[in-house]
Image (cartoon, rainbow, N blue to C red; front, side):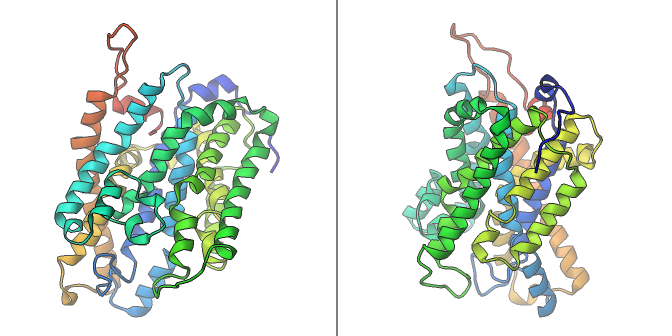
Length: 402
């Protein structure tokens, strides 16, 4: 993959807004939703299927189709985090101001969804070690799946995001010092790192015991998917790709070819060893899609993700992601066995209804929790103590949803 000559000035790239990336976020969250909704077993009640289709052939087909979708969606968010934080980095910003904005991005939403999950179902099923580690966002550091997915299961990924935020100010300086001609070399090294993690997980980490519902051991699953330090390869790759796009060194790979690359890599995860489906098989195509969409925005190209509807969906995607377990897993416990399982049309409507309910919950979380918290506490202070002009949440998202 050889870089082309710059298609636009570097300074123009730095000033560009990236609305299409905001819209693209929704599809990543939707993939996670489809992964959760089409599982054959509910995490809260393994005897009750999540999949809405009564026909076993159709149920197994949809489960197989989306069996790697959650991994793809999470990897997309991790690469995007590195890309966006590097793109919007503020020169000279004080460390405490950066950390305050980043913590406000995740903790208010996390705390609210954690409380709701504890009240509705987790409080009666998990012990103090599980709910306390999830509350503090350290649960992904433990090599136990019951702790990794304790309390509000989707929030496990925030453990990695929190690590990214803590390390970003210290990683940014060396990344910015890399000579432009060496950016691609470092990007390829990050991709190689994800392959190394998959190889170690497949052949060096113990593969016993092997639970009935997992194709690998719990330790292998934790090592390849949950352990936060090993997800840094995706985050740093996103940082490097942001620099590559800003420098005008992204090759002429458009959005459609990038989407086809993602689809091809996703198909490959169905036949590759299971651990390669977490990250290694898809991380480069995911990075290509993010970079291609960002490049289109820099060039002023109109995309489907720039419309008002897609912008709204992108803005609500974080809340949509965090509310999924509450809507899907708890909602499933409210229905008896004879009330679940539908024909093709009914199953599709059940999927759509659950998606709309999750979007509604995510929207409520955004307008009642996330935005008020950002407006109240995200302003920075001058050394003399006076407040600077606060940057509103909608204005920040107009640049790119960080």
